[in-house]
Length: 508
Ligand SMILES: [Zn+2]
Image (tube, rainbow, N blue to C red; front, side):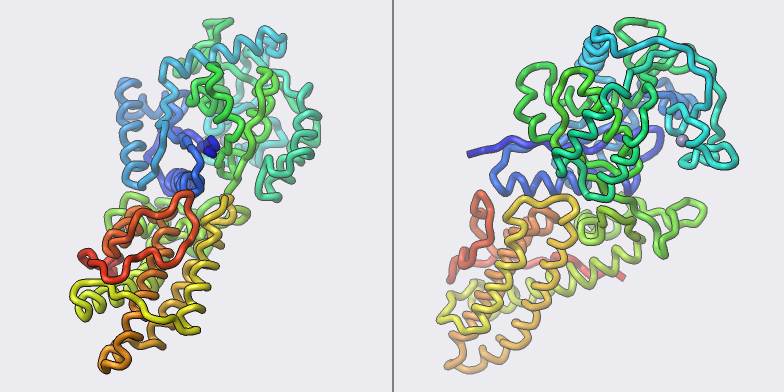
């Protein structure tokens, strides 16, 4: 039995270079994809870039570049970063794709035909950073956007097209009540319910071409392009070939990963757009919080605490970054990150607790048993105990994990790695090898240690696929069982070990 499922990340604005926030969401989506695939699901993962809107248009102008060249350059940069991060995406979204634009226009026309889009004049405040009209109550005391305090809001007087939102508010609240899993974790479900507790203003879905040209032309009025969020959100459908019917089984199991800053577009605009178009809602919004610098300081160039994903990869390797993000993410509160924290976690956890044990045990085995992994003899209570712990610590990754559960799964791996190190130290195979009558016991300890490490590495292929794959090659491990669950004794006794390299070389 194979089930289809579909995970999406937001598509990122290309007005700046990829940063740690982009890397984070896409890596978490990749971990969830690898988890579902290990369970035997068919999976599609989409990530990519949002190429439309005023901010991108102005970023190109600032660099004095033709818009197409600018977009191509940025897309290449983002795609290159995700490739280096080992994000196994199935779609790299570009909203400039012709098929996407046609489908967006089709969706707009169908909503227009249902009389849910109206044309009217709007006078008020506009934040270019948000690409959104603002109510006075949305602004700071100084009259600026709280998210873009340095960007100065503008006064606009414009005719635009608006989607009626209020007719759908009660229905959306009912959907949230009927489907507690629709928004996770709970704190954000409550925040969304709060957003929906008062009547909703109509949503402006157009921008006049006199102001913005970079976008999807409205099918019913060519003087306008589509509001960038309306166009961007639709990527989740257009990737899987909507309106072609083949989209349906993927869409039925769609999970959107989003940062808490974009809960409103995903929790309010998007479901209502879908309802207005007569389409089903996605299954789940998995929301996460943000990364801040050490001490809880916001990351900024002037403070010098910005963590650049590409610099981390160059210095420590991609798995140092993937591990840190998976281990320390918190769904419902912000988490701290710095290059020093990543280094520490890499050295103490991946290096000392996992990598060292693997090299010590595997090198010992090769040196003392003719390049081979010895066959085990009878198991003692200590052997059975560590084997049991390893199964218990990894079986969570043999089941469906949610975004919020990722750090707890990583914690169990580290806890059992400590236990494995204690086991190895207490059994002291380097002593056992000295006497003929304890030689068989030595074989057993080495076998148990390396077979336990194999189970841990199989589990870690969901998180740090490159390093875990190398470790399994060193152990000459057979292909993992599929669907995956932790199983003992799959290493072959008296088989050759591969070349043993240092998996996580120490950094200063
Ligand atoms: Zn703003």
